[in-house]
Image (cartoon, rainbow, N blue to C red; front, side):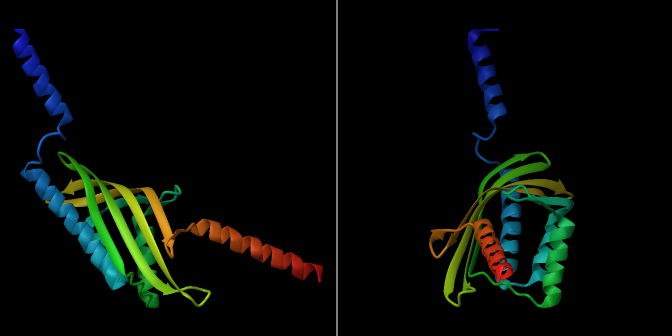
Length: 195
């Protein structure tokens, strides 16, 4: 084999191996559209505050063994998510964030599996326990695994890669707040026991 043919074959193999450097073809565009549609459906369900709508989107667009892994390592399974939403629906709880935006940042399709990276932004304004109005925003990055089921793409796993919570424009750690509250309660209990 001549050097020229060897270089051409090597270049072709490198392009095939890298794949992502090539322009997206029609199938990838269809997968991107389907995944964006699912993200948008879920965002709309969250905006309405209707737990039943959110349940319907999850049931229609996730696999039965779907799991969500939070940044803190907690893993939540599909039945737990659906049960929590069902409970909220029964109690009439309607959380309506001011804004919910899903943005598909990256997508790699390999036959019947797709890996996506999505950015999720949610914000809400409401009164806090102190009686003042506060603005909370959450920005998360998720790495999601999708599988083809018939003609549809279903979400199999979502892993939160990063999360940033802001309260009134300042970084906020809800776990630190919970620790502070527990510490205050313990101090109050100790003070009450001394009396």
